[in-house]
Length: 240
Picture: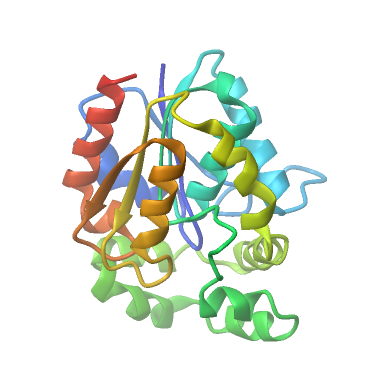
């Protein structure tokens, strides 16, 4: 059974490169969400429900339960899929993206959810400026990989996704809470996450009976602490 990784925003599947290099298994797959340096299927609307349904379809194609891992928006999608299609999951891990009715979207997300203002934010999110905004936090290689792949298609998908998710916590939390400890799970969070404070990771772990792993990092722990993240995932998979 494969380990399947789901990236966040404005990331691509490459955010998982360092973690995948550290895990001692050959069957890892990093999904590329539609519009994130990946084709958009005909008729696809980039909303939270459409992305969740797309992940479900990808998992169904494996034909067996998977070890599912998500970061940032990938974390929200993993929680949604685990709570609606637990038959597709052997274990799940999620972090730095809360499905929580008490969570208030961070300032940048709120700007992107605002018509016209979001378009202005997206206009400035590109090239060397974007690289410089992230390089100190995630390092040169990860920051360059991120900046080089944020194009107009991704920007439009990001705006549509965030605008579909103003009340995602209230909408998705009841199903997530109903999960309980039915599947082995881990919640991985950066202690210094500026976008989603660690208390939301603590709340999620408590609500679903998951192991909480707090790393000495910011929001982007897959790039900042890949060795520790890989160790936490390996421990989780051993319980599956």
